[in-house]
Image 1 (tube, rainbow, N blue to C red):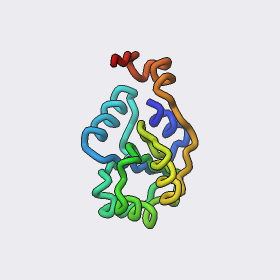
Image 2 (cartoon, rainbow, N blue to C red):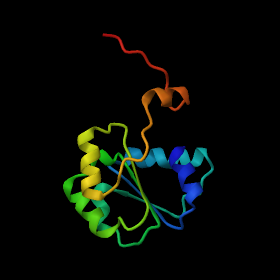
Image 3 (cartoon, one colour):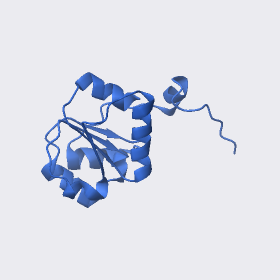
Amino acid sequence: QKGFKIIRELNPKSILILYPNIDIKKGWEDEAKLLNFNINNITFSTFASIKKLNAKFDFIIIDEIHKLSKNNIENLQFNYLKCPTLGLTGTLTNKTANTIYNSLTIPVCYKYSINKAVEEDILTPYKIYI
């Protein structure tokens, strides 16, 4: 929901959503249906297909950004990162943050903790037993 909220606020004409596998695309599509969000101006692409795209975009969302390979990063650097870009990850390590910033010059601008996600009903409350 947060991704679509940002899209609504920015109102870009053309959007690229990149993801590592088809399950993530389905999640975006399901969420769009749930929110009654029109996805006609959204191009969906796997990381592996980045180099096949031949279009300009006003806004890019990279879901699971920590899974980008070196080749994916190079394709993004030279072809697409000339517009606002939002990278999403649930497993941001310092190393990943540095790689993303140093390779794509995308700074970490917001951190959303697991506890906050539970508080806001994004995640189900959990318990860890050892």
